[in-house]
Image (cartoon, rainbow, N blue to C red; front, side):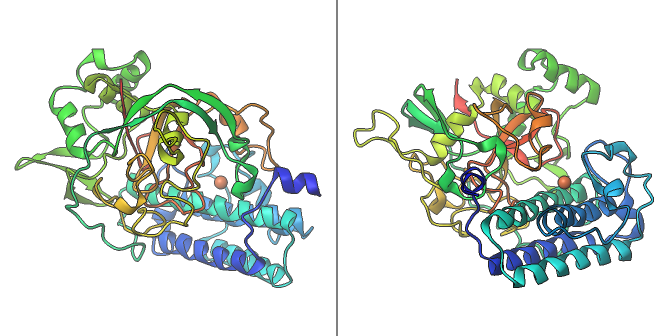
Length: 440
Ligand SMILES: [Fe+2]
């Protein structure tokens, strides 16, 4: 038991906390899906999204599989649940052709699973069992974010009641800060609470001094690259990036449409809106970030550099990184709206100058929330990696993905932790991702 607790720590959430979190994340899932039509719940077959109807059933199944069945030894309420919703065995392209129950039956299945979880939690939960509740809650958090970008991908209406309108016009936050070099401990520590297998464990990395931007690249900064012919200039693109650009015939970021009266407009959900110049550029893939960097004579930070800029502190004389690692960029206090635009605080990103109270020790802003930030790093296992019980969470994706850090406005604070490693293939321009750069 001790070994389990050391290897798979939990956040310390009580059974009551877990019950609250389960109800909260489910309310989000329902807000994002309940008002969709039957046709929208299925949607077109695309490699980047799931049929929404499949996805919500899968979320319910995941809860049932890991908590009710794995922890408590119950049987499934739906005899064919594994055959429908086990994402490890149901190939993506087949998810549109399954004999899925109809919508009310799926919502009913999800509610039934949740009800049984709440009953179990009413009797209390020990830490080894709590781990699986925390896992299933975070899994639903990830799908809540995916359901949000799915609505963008498919041009559905903006989700209602999910966050206040992002205030405009807080401005830009230009310039770099100096980060001294030194020894950095990359990854999560056993005292960090619930973490995923790919974050384990913190290990020493030597970092050379570097300069990193105080803010993410803005829409205006990215527009300058587009307007300078960046998408037509082979020299700014890697071979793979250029192949992607040619294949997609990309001329500008995915949702940008045209310049109208001097400003770019873009498709936000099902509407055309003006692009806000001071907001971070989003829906940018890794290749586009790489090309922008080549044009601007900048580079992406490695994930170790990103983490040191977000969580490190200088020694007293400023000559190197101190042997300290903050939990959040601003310190140990949990995130509040003045620190970070996280967990649907707003319904989209804020301008890059917002959330000054959340600055890191080095003065980097919005390292957490607003948009995910691509790093230069490949998604690789940390030394000593061992898969956790949800074996297919990380392992199948090593070496084919790039790491993103910091969460976005639609990420829960459980996933928006700065040490959480998100990972996507470098061609994905449908996610809430932008980037921050270092001096080359
Ligand atoms: Fe999943």
